[in-house]
Image 1 (cartoon, rainbow, N blue to C red):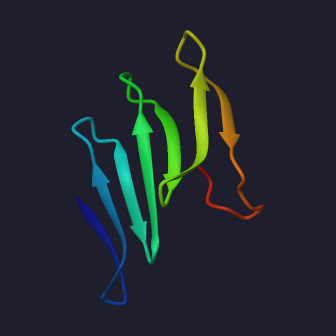
Image 2 (cartoon, helix red, strand yellow):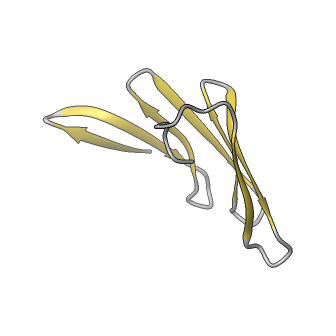
Length: 78
């Protein structure tokens, strides 16, 4: 787990899996969670349990599609 502080106040907290991928990001009242493939590629991003984005990959493991789901214009980049 890693914490980011600003002016002596914790502003973000990150948790990682065994492959060093970020699995959760807590910021204020927002809780992002991330899932990864067996190859450690991002596969889904959720905010508060609601799916906000997903990723698909080509056979050579290049990211093919990044889909944002019901996300406002200036939302967090997933």
